[in-house]
Image (cartoon, rainbow, N blue to C red; front, side):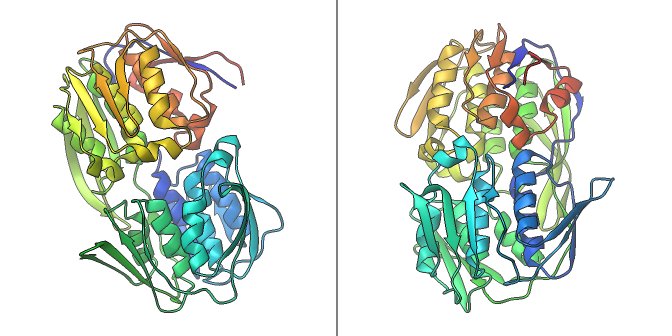
Length: 443
């Protein structure tokens, strides 16, 4: 366990290349494993979550290497060609890796045992299991559908039309990954659009994916039993990781930073929209596309923020960014209200409770509801001066470290280790911009 302390800082400046998008990194490895031929991946996030997915894909039969220049190569097995792993597949802290891989394995006539760290073993998997069971997949799991669990793919997978009870890109993606091996058309109906990285990268590898709006929601239709062809993938910088230096620069007077090649998928940019509504100065430069994904360089300048109400329907486009938005709200003028946060209860931690608890410890007045949070901003630097229990949650840890940079007194997190799951080198990267982050030297 390694604690880390953020000390009140002055203006940030410079250029920071944020690590590659975690969601796309997982998907690139998985689609490369299902494709025929060699897939070259540049910009892959080399955090623990993605490295665990790479290890799982190797265990399923893919040959995966990393060149000295950071380019990853994946030699795929083809749809239906994965082998039964010799050992348990351990996804560490990654709910995305585990849930998507459950869909991947569901399309193979093999058995695989899934596990993860203490945090992941607490997280529910039943919502992934339900649609896959309708396709003929069998599961043996702990009470509540929790890891460790065994996935047994059928000899003949059936296509399904499944309406998501709640918006979830992970459930949708698991169904689509399974549907690649099913005959006919597999359809997912979304009550609200969620991040569409799976649809984009499936098309990039040659799958037929149609998207249209119906009376009951957004229909995503995949034609199964298609051969996927290896294709190069250039992964953009992760907007969820970019959020931390971005918010820090907005809150520290005099700051100006540039974040190159950030993914600007419109289903992922709810935080940027919200911050602009609060008065943030964010400029997009050099807009372009990489592997079907919109990308731009972000220029960020500090400024005073005003409170807003963030509606529930925006949650799918910024579900991972609420912890850092809460820090921005703590420094804004007025009361910010966040609605539709029920999904945060089942993330790496109960993020809604963790946000409320941590903000209160830093001297910020909050009101926690069942699926909402009201944050009474300080109109400047909050008091700070707390030690936060991150509960193995990388986003809670990074959010409160940003709080420490912008507070009157230092803020510590009890365990910064999980930050490596999504933002390896976070301390050094932020330090390069001028942030005051110091560890206690223990592990």
